[in-house]
Length: 77
Image (tube, one colour):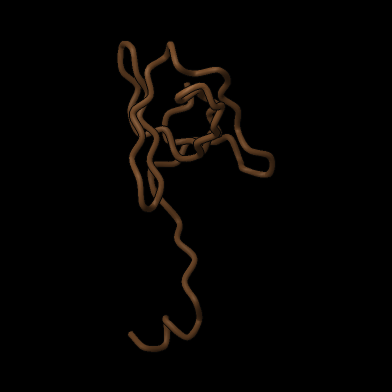
């Protein structure tokens, strides 16, 4: 249901609770894959404590990714 949407997932790693944010790229039988611009996270369902949409992010499905470029960078190309 959250495919291609931004989410924040709370999970436990080595006894510490961490939050990972990214776009839901794949959903499997026992895992979910989050991606962002730099990283790809594979998380088992058993390790997920909570998953929420971040505030201010629309909940509609979109398969494209918007990037924000600096105006100086745009002019050089």
